[in-house]
Length: 373
Length: 194
Image 1 (tube, each protein chain N blue to C red):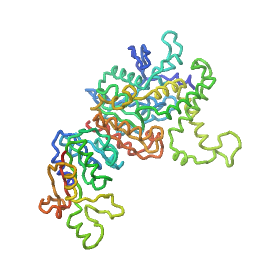
Image 2 (image 1 turned 135 degrees about the horizontal axis):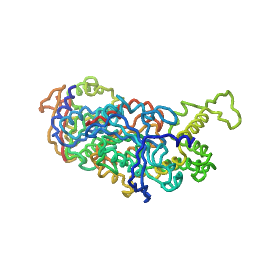
Image 3 (image 1 turned 45 degrees about the vertical axis):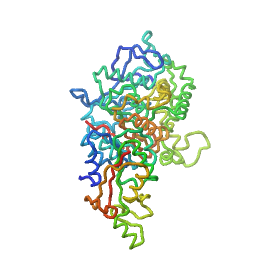
Image 4 (image 1 turned 120 degrees about the vertical axis):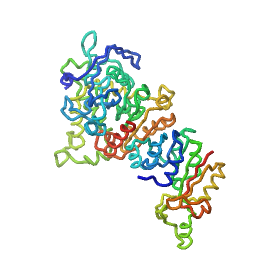
């Protein structure tokens, strides 16, 4: 439940400097919750920033405080793993607008102490990156060995290269895109409407009440979850099999296994995520288009990023951020002469492949981070 | 591991500190050698397993097709383009050569010589498409869709007004003399320029 979620204490810093936002509004101060792994070396040159996805969090390689489940990228980050914490100081911060300790719609209003709700300003992917840069300033890290991210984390990684090209040596972008397509926006809008149509949403001021829009948030998650999987993967996992019954019920219970699975995914999600945060972060993703400030020329975004080594990875079954979007980024990088690597990996899991067991991805990540270090 | 002889010749001939695009770079073997001498090497490779292997070695390689994706590179993006053992697999070798010399002022192009005496003999005596050490695959499944001879290539570059800076001929893995290279070279490496 939302109240339990907001009772968790996260490791965080509050930076009392104003954060100017793309919307023109200013956050007077920002709290950033983060986790770090591995030692920072003496000249502070081994830091790797991992950017998490829409519903991810800073617990990249440690158990989730709400669910108790292992970190979302524990298979990738740790001693001796592809992102080797024996070599790198790994930082992962909860994004601006989220609900795991960083400033977001559940944060208190400075004047009243009440949760901001929809009074929290609309933020962008680049605002998230600015907040991360403030955290790094606070930590005294001027330059990153690498920024790494999948999905929305990849968008932040691209935004890092575009916004602070001198502050990173390499960028690793997995299953991502430099803009949100009409289809991406459309799916997010379905999710937002599900939340806002839930009477328990109460115009976003549900924090103090006993009701939270869990039904709407669960439906939003169900719709989004479909986009993370491939048709082939769904068919293989569930087919048309029935759930705990031999015959159809001729009713509206979860007859099919796939229905039961989605209902479970939707409901479980509400234990660990805040509905307003979902609204804000999906909005930030929809607004994302790195070419927009450059008259639609994506290359313009990377004009100063010639010295960043980029690695992009897509998956052949990912229809949410398909290979064509990664290729578009690669073409922009090549046109400015940046060192870019790109490969489309074959994996059956759709967009979620970046979180799952794809051995070729492990080799790529290790190679992309290891070079020149 | 020692470099393939044609790659060793190219690696030796590329000046340190130059910028190079290796088209059809495989798993990045030549790129590693080039990097070791200070060359800024990038690669283009069609096979995802090879691309993965090259990136895992720390090389900058883009998965792509030389028939289409060279168009994504700007004019003069590199000092040298390299196309080793790939020309004969392309859909339009003439256009690929043109693209190489658009993105770099100079290019290394190497290919198996289809006029080598063993190839000629195979055709002459057996009346069959030759299957040799450098052309090891039967005609129906070979990726080599545009067989080319040393003389053919010279004709092509002449017709396109391209200069030949230098040529190396190989027989087996050893240098072959330029005399009667058309017969005796199993393999040729051309350094061409605009």
